[in-house]
Amino acid sequence: MAERTIEDRLREEYFELLPDIRRVVEHLEAKIKYCVLPISRKLDKHEQIVVKSRIKECDSALDALRRHQEGGTFDRTYPDRYSLTDLKDLAGVRVLTFPRSRWIEIDMELRQRFIDWESDPVLSYDKIDTLAFKYYGYCEEASKKVRGELQIVSMLIGLYWEVEHAAIYKPTPRLRGIADSLEMKQRDNDVHTALRAFEDEFEKQIRNQNR
Image (cartoon, rainbow, N blue to C red; front, side):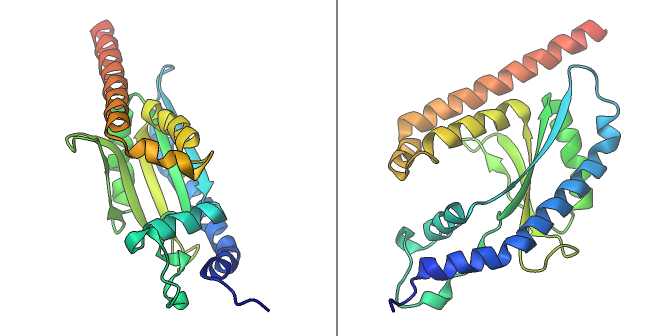
């Protein structure tokens, strides 16, 4: 019988963790929806808040853990060194908001409810602007093994990320190098800048009409 590989061990661990991952997602999504309910009830017609949850797929989790290792590979001499519980985003919830003013308001509300969670904001290419607020931590009521990830992001940028991620990362590993090119990073930054400018101008026009 062939010896089990590191990938075999990790796939087995993934399906052992899957019930915990599902509980964390369900608990986190329900808690966030409850926390943002007071804000949701006072939205104007043009405003939106959408809470989306996701569970990291098995192969995606293995790839992520591999990328975190030195040289982007597993050391075959230490097969027991690796665990998917080292990942912070097996269970994730993203809050999409429009316009950006609600993005700030929701972050202030949720930050008080997840005060012990680790902050790791997503910054722009030039490190000047914050593109998303991101937090990691345990929902101990749901699981003490699996951490959850909370993201709060502008709806326009969040939806753009879904397109960008699906186009570059999911179809084939060969395309991942595209995202690392300086030209694509600059174009990516241009998109973020344009989307933020759109939202800023939109909110400015709304304020002018309300005067």
